[in-house]
Amino acid sequence: MTIDRRKFLKGAVATSVTAMLPLNWAFAQNRPAGMAPLDVSAVTWSKAEDIPSHFNVLNTSPLNAMPAEHLLAPAKTPADIAFIRWNGQMPDFESIDPDTWEFTVDGESIETPKTYTIAELKKKFKTHTQQLVLECGGNSRENFYPNAKGNQWSNSAVFCAEWTGVLVKDVLADCGVKSDAVYTAHYGADKHISGKGAAISRGVPIEAAMSENAMIAWGMNGENIPFMHGYPLRIVFGGRPGSVSQKCATGMGVRDRVHDGKKMGAPAYQVPKNPVAPGEKVDNKDFKIIEEMIVKSLITAPQTGGELTLGQSLEVSGHAWAGTRDVAKVEVSYDYGTTWQTASLTKPVNPMAWQQWKINVKLPQTGYYEIWARATDTKGDTQPMVQPQWNPKGYLFNGCHRVAVRVV
Ligand SMILES: Nc1nc2c(c(=O)[nH]1)N[C@H]1C(S)=C(S)[C@@H](COP(=O)(O)O)O[C@H]1N2
Ligand SMILES: [Mo]
Image 1 (cartoon, rainbow, N blue to C red):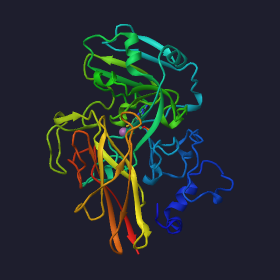
Image 2 (cartoon, protein in one colour):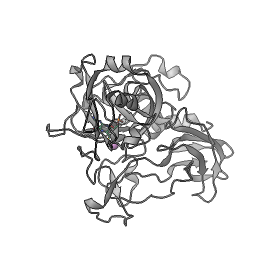
Image 3 (cartoon, rainbow, N blue to C red):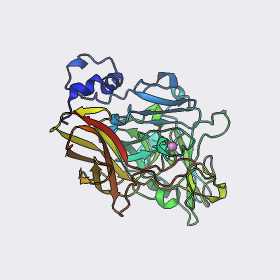
Image 4 (cartoon, rainbow, N blue to C red):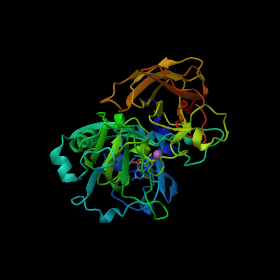
């Protein structure tokens, strides 16, 4: 990073880095520039009012909040940075006892319904640890034009934490899955905002539940899952819309039909079956479920507003991910896509973890620049430069992320 740090620190970074400190950090002013605090699992708060100030809060009831994009720079997202999305009332976290918490497997297509405590899950099945990208289906919604209703997420409703737990497929096998199984059904402890019924209960095609990247997890980044991210037990699916990763999970059903739980019906988490014009109305019968997320990248450095002097090289870096696929290439442009340069790109630590890319660019003259990033996945799908297919609920935005800097 060769951008002038003093210039950066005068601006937005200085406030956000200080604001994100989990504790009163002694001698923080002496740390090397830009050094982030270790994750001390500061996410023990349980009420919307207590949300740390580094979050941009979109709503408090239900609570929806996101960090600034540059805070997502670490390859493994610290728990206290990850965006927070609730569809209804949060559970009463303080009253949760992890020792008596139960997870029930049932449904038409399960041979022997069973209930497990967390201790039983830990004892009976092999423990797995892996990093998985969790992205809200509506991440980047604010970029759609015309504007789509819903939480106006910037590009930070995505994170890649490390989860520890058991595989969904091992637990389902223990209960026996009938040959007529079609879909899973996910259940959690939180209530609809009215206090009546479930806030959300989504599912995935049974094949997805049989993958190596579908977990029932009790750990996030080596610690208990913090309240906000689904304490004490969470279903986590890599590569799929975040809404299927049920927090505070009380069970999973295996259905002989597409699950019909809360927010499974159109238009929630669905897109039109056929392309529509921007702004067009779509009948509920003409929607289809979003099963997988798509290729995308995020620039975490530099931040918009950075300045450098002519001749300095600029390191541009970030992450890229592609639903259930790997990313094959990331390119960067500083001339609105006229020319592209290929960035170096890491392999994912495991399938469905995001990949890190970086590149040094030399900006040829003084003035204002936009830096654009574009990822391509292993099937050849690439990010559109402007907006992808518009849809009424504003899902799956994967247009190129851009930041602006100035050469002086
Ligand atoms: N129990 C429960 N699980 C839930 C939700 C919810 O409202 N309740 N929201 C879902 C949605 S839409 C998303 S995008 C992710 C957000 O996960 P996070 O809050 O850990 O970022 O959780 C999913 N799991
Ligand atoms: Mo979501």
